[in-house]
Each structure stands twice: as C-alpha cells, then as structure tokens.
Image (tube, rainbow, N blue to C red; front, side):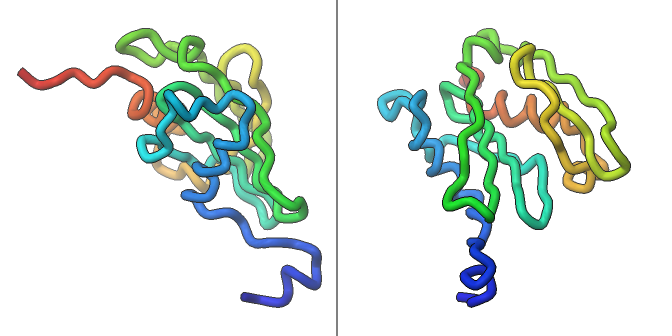
Amino acid sequence: MSIVPIILGRRNFKTKGEIIEFVKNSKNYNPKKEFLDDSEALLIFQTSNQQTWLVSTKERLYCILDDIRKDKPNINWSVPKERLTTEDKVNVEIKIRDKSERTGLLDIGPNHRNWFFSKDLFKGVDINNMIRGLISKTMLLKKEEG
C-alpha cells in the first residue's frame, strides 16, 4: 500500500466490485429482491479525485459518487425499475449534452439531471446505448428460447 494517500488524507478508488457491493448501504436496497451477483456497473465520470458509477440491479438504478477525499463513496440517488422500464423495453428518457471538450452532461429521467460524464470513457460508443444496455441487461425479462 502506498503511503502517499495516507499523507494526503486520501484513499484509493473503490473497485467496480466494491462499488456494486456499496449498493447495500442504500436505504432503498432490498436484499430479498436485489441480488448483487446479477448486478452491473458502468463508470460514467472520472477525474483524479472522483468517479461516478451507475449500478443497475434487478430492481433499481443507483448513482454512486466515489470521491477519494471522502471516507467512503456516496449514493446520490436511485430510481426504481418501474420508472425506467416496461416489461420488455427501457423507456426512461436519457438526454446527452456537451459541457466542455472533455465533459458532457447527462439527464436520466426528469429528476436526475446534469450529471457529468467523461467523453474519454465513451470514445467510439454511444453513452445513451451503454446506459440503456446496462438497464436492459439487469432489469428486463429474459425470454427463454423455444
């Protein structure tokens, strides 16, 4: 372990697996319905001090800010499945706007607006499709092949 983070009063970023596990700290987390083994996480924003993750479980989408200057990550918000999907479709409105050369702004539904995302993390891919894919993979009913 490096001593620099200790001297600076910082810690290392949480791993993707640790961020998924951190969902258990949400007041909205339901251990009887949400199984973290079936969850997925997507890193959407990254600076030298902060990372923002979207974590999708079977029942909710969580937004988690991991700021290494703080003791632990923070769950900024979560949205229930019912506000994101119908039985077979992701129906939440996702809007993308430019903020700067390196940063964009992201709205997920009407209540979660102006979240930063790092354009570098999505070179050659559409962030809208990535978020829809994240939600779809964990929340939509899987049709069994006949």
